[in-house]
Length: 327
Image (tube, rainbow, N blue to C red; front, side, top):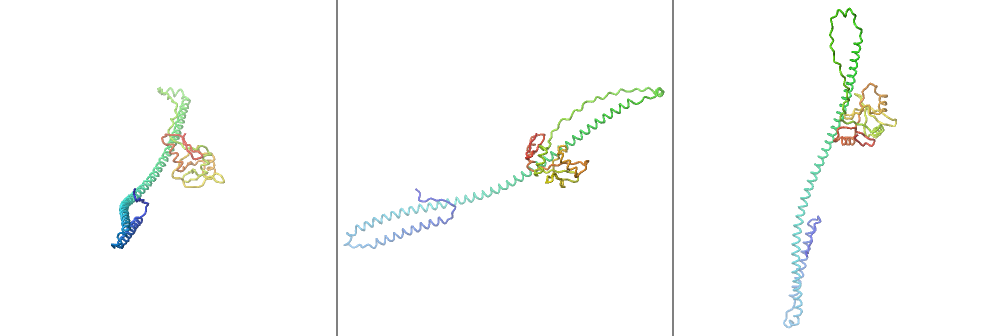
C-alpha cells in the first residue's frame, strides 16, 4: 500500500514545497520528543538505597523508550518512502509537463497548417467555381452561335429553294417565247440542240437534330416571379444601350442600365409577349434587333452546371422556386 498518491492537476511547485515543509516539521517534532525523553532519563536518581524501589519504573520507562524508538524508526522509514515518492512524482510531473508543452506546440502547428489548408481549399473552390461558370458561359455562347448558324443555314436553304423556283420559271418563260419567222429560219444554218439531262431533284432532308442545351423557364408566371423577387436579372440590350426589367407597383418597368458583362441569351420567341410589347411600346422601334439577356445568381448557376454534367443536350427548365431540371 502506497503512503503517497500524486495527481497533476496543472498546479505549480508550491504543493511539493508545502509537503516537504510538513515533513521537516514532523522530523523536528520527533527530535524534540526524543530530546525530552533523553533528558528525563538522565534526570532519574541512581542512589543505591532506592535502586530496588525504582527498578520497575525504570523498566517501564525503558520499555516506553524502546517503543518510541521503534515508532521513530517506522516514521523515519515512512518519511524516507514519502520523500522517494515525492522525488518520483516530481520527476513524473516534469516529464508530463514537458510532454504537454511538446503536444501543445504540435497542436498549434497542426492548427496553423489546417488553417492554411482550409484557406487554400476555399481559394481552389472559388477558382473552380469561376472556371465552371466561365465554361458554362462559353457553352451557352457556343449554343447561341450554333443556333444562329442553324438559322442562317435555314435561310440560305430557303434562298436556294427560291432561286431554284426562279430558274424553273425562267426556263418555262423561254420555252413559251414566240417562234422566229419562216424566212429567217430558212436562212439560218441548222442548229443541233443538245439534249440536256434533266436535273433530278432530291427531297431535302431535314438536318439531324444537334446536341446542345437551351435555357427556358417553366412558364411565363415562373419568369415573372423570379424577376419580381430578384432571383434572376432580366435585361434588354439594344446596342449601345441596355435596360433592366423590373416589376413595381405600377407594373412592368424598364430601367436604363449598363449592359451585363456575362449573360445567357433567351430566344426571342420564348420571351413572353407582354415583355416584348411593353418594351417596344415605350423604347425601341420595331426594326431594332433586341437581345434578351438573363443573369443567373451563383446558386442557380451551380444547379444548371450540375444538371448539365455528363449530358450532351436538352432543355434546361427553371421553375418558379428557382429549382432546375433537365428535359
